[in-house]
Image (cartoon, rainbow, N blue to C red):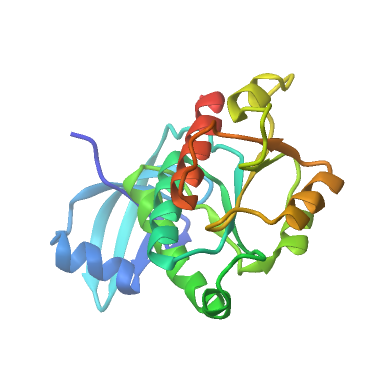
Length: 237
């Protein structure tokens, strides 16, 4: 049976811990017992961990042998802020698919109320990616930045930079990826409901981003984010 994986909150030598709500979930929901074994991700490795103690919102593990870990994908997702329930679904699924960083973006068409509330959602998004990373057996959760405006988000991006655009008529995302000489860090920019404005697409063009499409079907923002991430991740396997 495959052991459940947990990402440690604290690590010191051959000891690791889960704390707070993270530990409570394991203790109260999954009813962990002293002596049970799990895979514990410690930031730079995955090791076998045996539960040593359970007390006061804290679970301690004795760490054993290092285990093989898959190579992390280098995919940054610039995700324009849209309706929070749908956005959280996209964040969860893109984490499962292997993104390494998520940058929430305040776009021109982001609802003003969502934009104002987005900064307070960042911590919730980080909890979502932690849970999704553990569920999908990854060694580290993707970094989730504070929401930023588009110009700042574009400055954070390096590597192969691709903006999804409904107006793109020629370049399909898969064709863009296959045309590159070697896979590298890839940055995907996915717009809000209604897509990027023409001015924003011009900003991408001036910054030498590659415009790409997912085809003739118009997708919801959350569907586009997941579909595009899956396509890029498939090229990295």
